[in-house]
Image 1 (cartoon, rainbow, N blue to C red):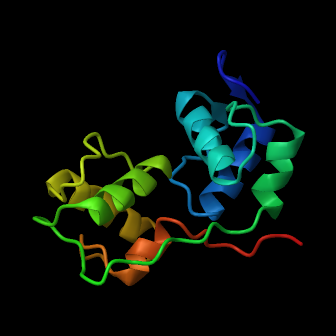
Image 2 (image 1 turned 135 degrees about the vertical axis):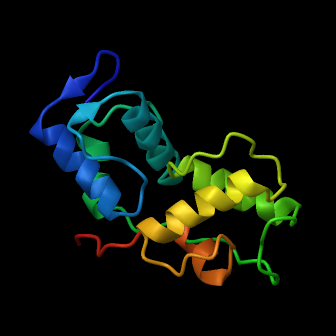
Amino acid sequence: MTYPPITSGTTVRQWQQQMKNRGWNIVPDGQYGPASRRICRNFQQEHRLQADGIVGPITWRATWEAPSTQPPPAPADVLRVGSYGDAVAAWEKQADSRGWRIKNVDGSFDEETAVACRAMQTALNLPVTGQVDHQTWDAAWLERVAIAV
C-alpha cells in the first residue's frame, strides 16, 4: 500500500482495522491516503522499521506481530488544562503521532489538548475526564489487542 496515489480495497481496510484494533486513531475506510500513510510512518518509527509510509511485507507482518510499545513512566501529577512542561509535551507528541490530532504540540495543556485527550479516552473506553492520569498516559503508548505470536 502506498500513497500517492490513493490505494483502495479490502486489504487496505483490513490493515486499517488492525491498526485501529491496536489503538491507533484511524478510520477503516479502505482508502490508503495521507492519514493512513501518516499513521503507517508513525507505527514504523515506533517499531524501528524503515519509516517510508509503505505497507509492504515487513510492515504488514509487524501490524499483527509487533509487541506493544512500552510507555515512559507517567508523571507524578495528573496533567490537566493549565499544566505545562516536558511531560505535557511528551504526551501531546505521542498522542498526536497515534492520530489524536493536536496542532500545537508545545508542552502547554490547553483546551485543544483536552479535546484530544477526551477523544482518545472515549475511543479507548477509558473514563472521559479530559485529564491525563496514569491510565490515559499509558494508553497513548500501549496497544490494546493481543498480538499474534
